[in-house]
Amino acid sequence: MCTSETGCSCATTTATPMGETAGLRTVYQVAGMTCGGCASRVSKQLAEVPGVRDVNVDLATGAVTVTSSAKLDDDAISAAVTQAGYQLAN
Image 1 (cartoon, rainbow, N blue to C red):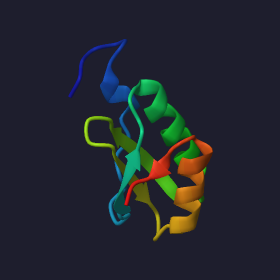
Image 2 (cartoon, one colour):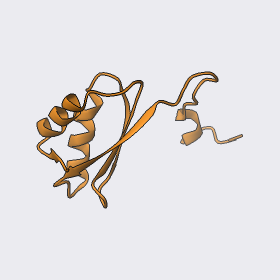
Image 3 (cartoon, one colour):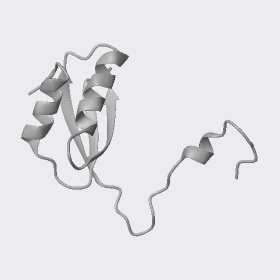
Image 4 (tube, helix red, strand yellow):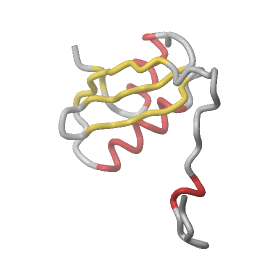
């Protein structure tokens, strides 16, 4: 247990309640992302898709891992990535 009074990252960490699933993880390849700004734009747009819980972008590989509460609509994901200015890679 952390004994720090301020600046502790433990205080902001959330745990998954027992009995709740962590969600589905789907990995998409996004072409053209080259910097943190790119990742931020893609993450922001994907976070607005209904059902999306979390978005994790790996710039080195172009992989975007989306955690959702249920299976996502691939057209909605593609539209969100396009809205951010990028395209899903085949």
